[in-house]
Image 1 (cartoon, rainbow, N blue to C red):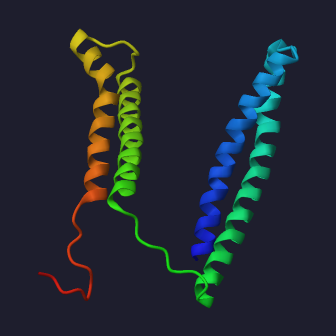
Image 2: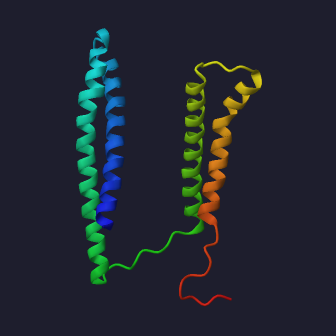
Image 3: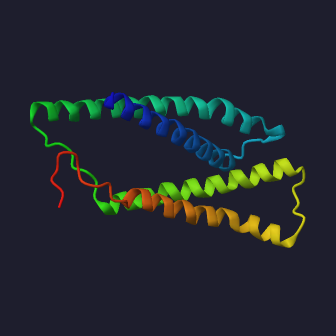
Length: 166
């Protein structure tokens, strides 16, 4: 199951990364070679045909290579050639928790703001104070998410099972 999980994670990363890279590189090449953008046909071809094909290929390569690497490492551990992996220290956990919390809080605030604007039926705010709150909401959400991520990553989980406390 561990091999499948890592392969799936890296396949999704490869899918998204391949799509974004194909769109960026394709747009730059269109500009460099002065491709006609009449009615956006070239951009639609890039976005709906070329980029998904590149994304599928990169996902396949990333997932397959991750499965091979994970399987080899797991086999080395089973044979006793490699030591078991050590748990992460406080520093890397804090950085990862803060980064995930920052992105999640910012995204949640933007989604909340988008939902409010869609449900209110107008893209304009009724007062200056509401506009200021809406302008600061993503930053407040990012700060709150970062704090929550740090707290979750660094909280004390108590003594390990079977360990003697005290």
